[in-house]
Amino acid sequence: MRYTLRQIEYFVAAGDTLSITLASDKVHISQPAISAAISHLEEEFGIQLFIRHHAQGLSLTPEGLRFLREARALLAHADDLQGVARELSDTVAGELKVACLVTLYPLLVPELLHSFRRRFRETQVHAVPGNQPEIFAALRRGEVSLALTYDMDVPADITIEALAPLPPIAFVAASHPVARRKSIALSALAEEPFLLLDLPISRDYFLSLFEANGLRPNIAGRFEHWEVIRSLVARGDGYSIGNVRPRNQASLDGRKLAYLFLDDKSPPLSIGVAEMQGVRRNKLADAFVATCRDLVRADSLPGMI
Image (cartoon, rainbow, N blue to C red; front, side):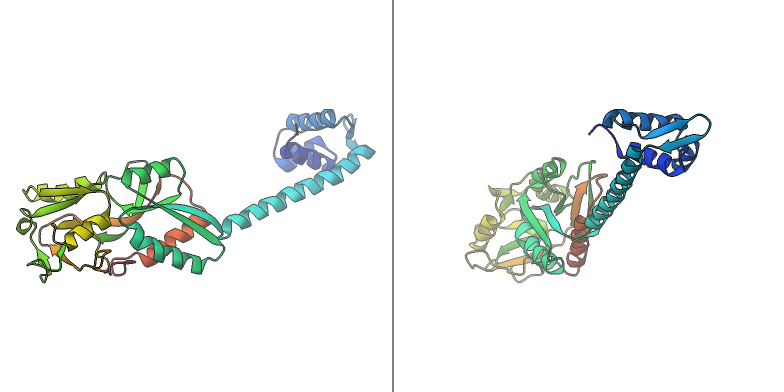
């Protein structure tokens, strides 16, 4: 197709007014542009659309009259199509891909997806886990539209809306001598075996808690999987630090854990919704972010106490 809707619009304006001058005023374009559009259409379709009368305007040929009827229908259909597009963009439906930090994934994702699907039954949300760099890379590649993660080392090209602050919390086996306490100073644990969550950026955050208090951790193990650390801690193999306190305070093999707030002035992290800077959200993404705001709050955290 070697013509444009704009050229059709100019032809219809000329056909309605039978004047290049009046058509120019109607569509707010120069007279030469109107004449050029008509000439292009006549050449493209191999028909004469108008008879030009010197100083007396235009008259439609029989072919031009029929062409005008079809051209009006084409423009009307284009308007209808634009209306359909607006309607689709305003409908909360379709598929949305989101990422979630691997340590938050089993806690946040089930309740968020369940609640979102109940609200918007014509949607399908696919959530994938990843560490912080993997999440940011997925956003940049357009593989996901949104990401649920902490506000840790967020690059300048990514924005994050903080939803709920989470201070660091130490956890020990339920049989540990300090297990019944509500809080503890990090210095009281520093000499004991520390099991580090060894994920990019996350590891730096946890180690910085010791550094900020002039302490060196006694690292007894490095693990990439949170549940491995919880199981080892529950068996008495050491302690660890996290930012979430799950409602189920036991390891996967059923052994009990105890969680203690840190007395030290340790910087909290915030759970938030991340997205690429300057990217316009569609209605579906807007609705998912609104659901996150409703469910992820300081006084109510999915899967957590």
